[in-house]
Image (cartoon, rainbow, N blue to C red; front, side, top):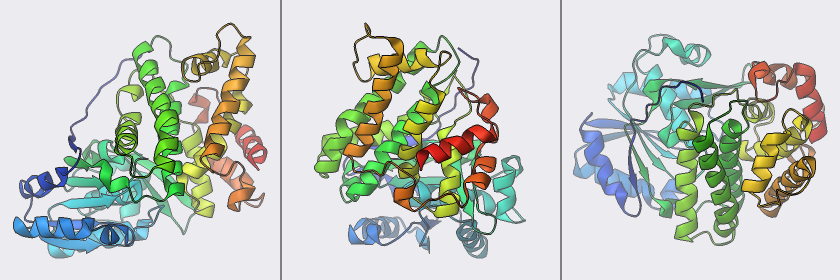
Length: 386
């Protein structure tokens, strides 16, 4: 196991009715707040009114940044930062999924930065301070409510970049599984795929001896496999929604990501798909992951696929290692298909047009991945996914 530093400062209020703790938490830092959200779903469900009323009771003035895109754009971040500067706003509240939270995080940093917000995406070391961040999560997927990361897109350059800062950890996050009841089936499925991908990214690693981290990752994967279909077919099943919500928070930037560090593979490649075609992140991950698994399966990597197949899918350990690995990959692909997630890039409107530039961008730093990939490998992987 590698040396590591672990910090998880976010306070979490998990369960029904925990939203009542939000205004008091905000009030400790500011008398006003920028509410960051996407479309109209939080208004349809009544969550918007609940938050506005709770803030009014604590005399917290609420400003708004609405219309955050599913793959949040730097232009939206710029608007939010300008609002914060213009009105001297002292805190940022994201309500929604990972997109709203990621946008809010960078807004919080850009509000304390004198130059263009895109500078911070390109070089997060420029982030020296940020407004306090609060979140109310409405979909189990990215885990942004408890991590230090954000992903922002730039339409002008077709870039979608991940960035990290210790200042991005939310101060307080409200996790009420009931707020995920209204998530559409396709988004529930995509969220499950995203959670599983986060677990995969630090499970498939060259580091030996991270036994605890591996077992926790397997538990997260098994939780998704068990509860994903239940939430998909029974959207108001509290047990399923609760387990998926907590799995999402645990799958990234937590225990599974410490001591077994390795460069993620599927995520940086998928970011190129989203950057050029604006597809749903979890869908792209579900398409790429089994293809990546098939591509890297060899004598060097088969041992990890055996662990995965035996411990997660309960395949007999008596079978040939490569048979176990292939069966585990087939079960992974079948699981995503059972949630009606597309299995090829063509199904989501992606053809050969941008494959080469996406491979070039998506292959950066993959020499440090579980199985190192070069640009030509990523290009072939993308072709295999068509």
